[in-house]
Length: 601
Image (cartoon, rainbow, N blue to C red):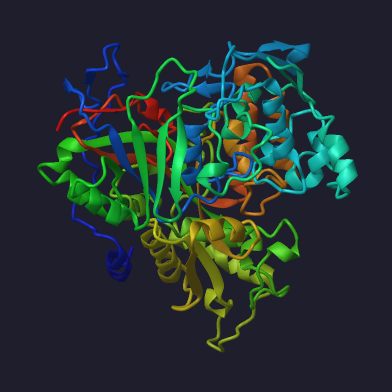
């Protein structure tokens, strides 16, 4: 990295001399409320009497959740609220072990792995007092698979019998077209493999065996949905099946949760209120934490060094490995011209990212470790593929395109020739400067600008792009979630937190037509191996097949993988009983808010 690049990144981030991460502390304790309710075990190891005021204050995000409709949710902000207010048949405990919630037990599996049968717990009710019945789970899948809505996670249920007829190739479920006739869609929705023989039995019939499908039943998209619940825009529209419910929603200011009086779970919340504060960026949230205004906070990359060198704050640090990845989408232009941005330079007038050598050049021009050191405070590890450490299918040693600026330039020269780029600026050579503007997008106010600046400058200094060639812009998160898959950008910021610990969940992001495939990548060789892996029952053979699939995408430089996550949190000493999980969403322990207590302070 040149001095100029360090300087430019330093405008957006605080870069300290040390480039090694601080000593990681262990995750907070996992003790929950005790029987008496009068004392508690602190998540940081202390004990004490409970505070009279059991109001937990947390920063949620800079803007409202994009949606609180379980069928439509796709981002961690929305899922954080849904995780506290909704529970389905199954869920994951803190150790990522699949356990029953609304179901009495794990499913009975029959018909060669194609049939899963669940029995509901007796007496379970929603927050409004109405009983939770099996048909409400069926309704969840009907809403999810309705092609008229185009839910981004519909593809996750492609294995359900009848899903392919509804979604077809558009969502990667099959080869046919998606039906558009209302009568046909209604008829097909009534025939899907989600059925309720009676009010206490849910049967999921699959089109083919899928070893991971129980995990899908633990996702927010599979939570029961009461028939009367048709809108999700205001607190009054929301009915809860989880430990908390939404009491109030002041848009773009605060969401207030209170305990669900009908929560059927064994652990009842001690907290009497959770205030999810909305507005401001992560640095503002950190300042609010330091002033005592919130109780836990994620430390932005810009402040990681400062926090670990602060005598008081360093004692409140909790570093937690996450099943998460930071990556940036190259628009592969394989989902149609309407989703491939126009760009001058290439002979066909479309984004240069359509070219494999171009994507390889951008990949090899980035020093990923330096990216982590300068924009994440040195915490996290380099990512060269989509499957995360600790998940079968993680391919630790495969890296065909390591940081190598000379090799990147060679690939760029080939790419420009293949794209038909000519010497437009009359400097006597064909270089990236002869390409037109590239749209580079990210979501605002979430600490992403330093990372975008790092990448753009690495490509300028390493490959010769012009000073103004990257049209860098941001949108609010809800808008960005719509713009990115629509193909507005040549390059766009992306990230993923595992919905369940299985390679299927991460590699789905690269499948042709998949709802969260924002890079528009599509390679039949990848899809063939990926789909074959799902049907293999031998764990070692299945893992090998997932690795085979992933290497196809890595060889294609489908996206720019950068970092597997470690999140640094600050936790006030009086916050007790945090049950931390590598699948936490926005705040430490937010998968299990019902176990948190506040001590006297």
